[in-house]
Amino acid sequence: MADDLRGRILSGELAAGTPLREEALASTAGLSRHTVRTALARLATERLVIQEAYRGIRVTSFTAEDVRALQELRCALEAEAVRLTRERYGQSWPEEVTAPFQKAMLELERVASTHPDDWRLVATAHAAVHRALVATAGSPRIEEAYARLDSEMLLLLVNLRPTYSAEEVANDHRAFLNEVQVDGESAVRRHLDHGTQQIWPRSARGIDADH
Image 1 (tube, rainbow, N blue to C red):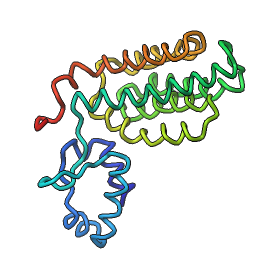
Image 2: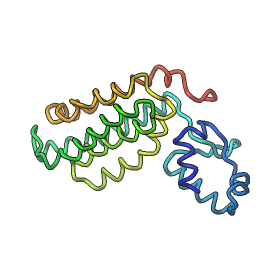
Image 3: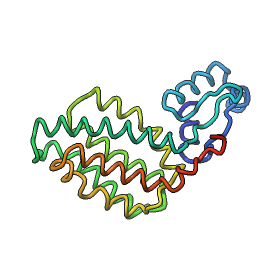
């Protein structure tokens, strides 16, 4: 049930703000309300749905402040991962450390070239590049914390499709690995600030009209 709803949310079939009613979902799926409630609770931990007083449960929508807060958290985790990696390897990281990033980068370039209009696919490949960067630190706790942001970040990118193209997304990441080795945390901040600016024209107006 959770997998099905997650797929429908991330595909855009269930748009931001769509109400999710336990009774209706249970009846449609032929499941108990307890099962549906458990599935929705799982999605809530991923921040794909939100429960509010007097409004029930609905698909998460983003305000400008939500976008800013999510990017700040990503920056804190990525910057710390880069700091730890530079502490260990300096400004020239060994190939075995950078290989997963390079592999993820090649996949992002492939997707951007072959499926430029499939934004969910582009967003998924983009997320893999950043996860590979975080993994260079060799810190399971940081990786675990960063992985918890995956679904929310995918939802953000699917719903707020940035103002730049898939090709530009790939281009923005080609030099990123070299930049973080040389400039460390400041390169992470520059990169994520740039990404925030790409979605700011829409997010600044507030995606959820009720906020």
